[in-house]
Each structure stands twice: as C-alpha cells, then as structure tokens.
Amino acid sequence: MTSDDLNLTVLAGPTAVGKGTVSRKLLELHPEIYLSISATTRAPREHEIDGVHYHFIDRESFEKKINDQEFLEYAVVHGVNLYGTLWQPILDANKAGRPALLEIDLQGARQVKEIAKNAKFIFLAPPSFEELVTRLGMRGTEPLEERKKRLETAHQELAAQNEFDYVVVNDDVNRAVAEIEMIMGLN
Ligand code: 5GP
Image (cartoon, rainbow, N blue to C red; front, side, top):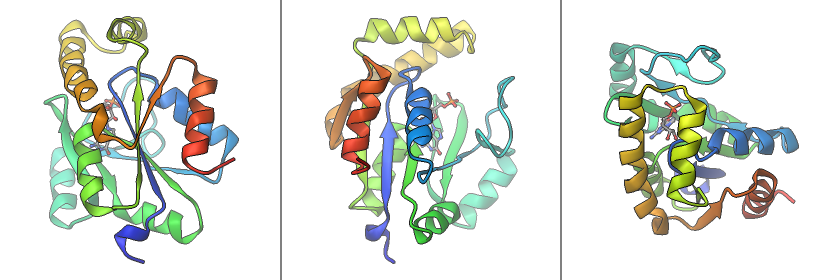
C-alpha cells in the first residue's frame, strides 16, 4: 500500500465549529470508521480521557516521536501546543478495511495533502464568524486570552477554506453529517 491508497478523510475547520459533535454523530452511524486519536502536548480538559480523546504526552516524548517519524503530520496549533496524527493506527485501520477520519487543523491538512493525494478534504464551516464567537464563548472551556488566540487562528482558517475539496456548513448537525456521509461514500 502506498500513501496514495490510504482511505482517509480529513475534517478540518475552525475552533468551536462543531467538528467533535459532527464526528461523534458520524461514528454513531458508522462504527466502522476509525477516528484518529491525536497525540498532543496540551493538558487534558476535565472530561478528557487519555487514549480516548487524545494521547496526552509531554514535549520530550512528542519530539522523540517526530524524530522516529511516527507522525503522518504534526503542527503547533494556536501557537502553543503540539498536535500530531500517528501513522500506525491509520495503517492498521485501513488494513482492517476501516476508513480513517482525521480531525486536524489547517496546517495538518496541508501536510496530509502532500502525502496522501487521494485523501478527501472537508472543511467544516460555521454559518458565520459571529456564530463561531458565540459558540466558543458558550463552550466556556478556554480563558479569554486563549479564546482570542483561537479566534485569530479561525480567521486564517476561514480564509483558506477554498483549499479544500468540500466545504460543509455546520448550520444543522444532522444535515452536515448527511453531507459528509455522501462525500465519504458511506450511504
Ligand atoms: P483542541 O485543543 O480544542 O482539542 O484542538 C485544537 C485544534 O487542534 C483543533 O482545531 C484540532 O483540529 C487541532 N488538532 C487536533 N488534533 C490534531 C492533529 O493531530 N494534528 C493537527 N495538525 N491538528 C490537530
């Protein structure tokens, strides 16, 4: 198998757009999908479980994995922490006939595009920027400074949505999920 044969869909989009909710719904409907669990140096949020939401690792371990070429892609996100997609679980999932879904940022999506030419690239967009500000505020998981940083990144990400094969507007979760099912050929 070459990296061009990977059965891979990248779901990117700005902070608080609802990537988590959309992919959770998608997984409920299609448990065969392997949702990639990223490694990150970010500290876990209160409800987050190591090995389920992320592999929470320290910077030293992350850098070792970079050196050992364990990452399909990795990036510093929001100017602070490292996040990366591990190769091995994706190869294992594909070998078992399972499509892989990556919930990553724009920088990561660009890297994957260089490696996996036939992957599908979906940008999940908010109905408006104002809606994003509201959703991020309501989530309340980040302090004000962090929210500002995330919204700056969001500006840049929204400007790059035309780099993606598909733009899906998350105005309604079920509708957005149905569109993604079609793109992934799951219906
Ligand atoms: P959060 O800290 O809210 O969980 O995620 C912050 C951002 O990091 C999100 O936009 C998410 O898409 C991105 N992200 C999560 N995992 C990865 C990854 O493995 N690689 C890259 N490049 N970005 C990731």
